[in-house]
Structures are given as C-alpha cells and as structure tokens.
Length: 168
Image 1 (cartoon, rainbow, N blue to C red):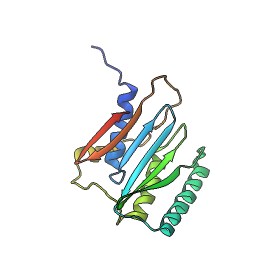
Image 2: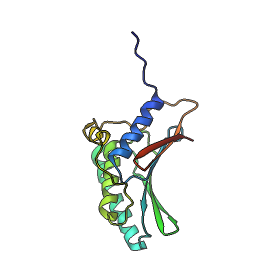
Image 3: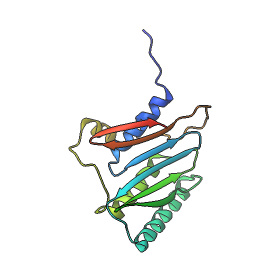
Image 4: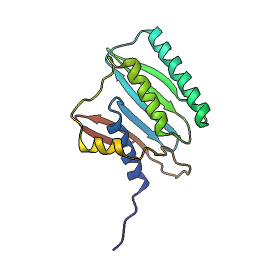
C-alpha cells in the first residue's frame, strides 16, 4: 500500500478553505506565492465616513505595530478601501515571507469590532467543517520560504455556503 503525498497546491487550497470557514467576515482572499502577497478583503454595506476610516486605520496600525514588537514580524500590512456603488471593499495586504494565523485573526477581529453593523457576513448554521476548523491547529504558515517557477496565485471566496478557489 502506498500513500500519496498531498501537493502544496492542495495544502494551500485547504488553508484558504479553513480561513474562509473560520472567519465568515472575510469576503475574499488572494494568495500569490510568487509575489509573496497575501490579501484579505471585507465588504461593507455602506461607505464609512473619512474620520471613521482614518480612526480604524490608526487602530489597526497601532495593534499591528504592537503585535510586530511582540512577535518580531518584519512588516505591518497595508490597508486600503475601494468604494463600489453603495458598498466599500476593505483590503488588508501583507508583503511578507510569513503571515501567521494570529495576524489574520487580529485583523479580522478589529474589522469585526469596528464595522460589525456594516459588515457583510455570510450567516448560516454551524456546520461540521466549521466546528472542525475551530478545533484545528492554528499554526498555518501562510507563505512558505522556498519559491518555485510556476507559483500559484490563488483567489478564494465564499458564496451560498460554498468556498470557491481559483488559480489566476
């Protein structure tokens, strides 16, 4: 009997599924290994006023700087917003070799805290996969050290209880 090794692409896809199930407030994820880019986005039902957005950016920056100090990570993420009709897309982007689940958790928690009433969150009864995701080991290394030539550029989103992942 021989065991097949799980490919890295499958492993990365599993990680994106885990994140989207664990954090229903995350709207999309873009994971580009070649550019060492990891971006999560959140969708707001309206356009927050400038003061609120600046206050949120400052809060996020302060928290990430403190986290950086404690964890010794290299860089803090960039945050930007894109207005779309009556909605706003908040994007948080890391350009690091390593992103921890703790960083994703911190950012997601801060977005949830500040924009809870405005955040578009897919709600449904908790599934077995969600319970397993909550109990899973949270030590994902989101961006591995080594590079390959044809690196994947994964884009993931959730719709109607399903997670879709595309290699762009």
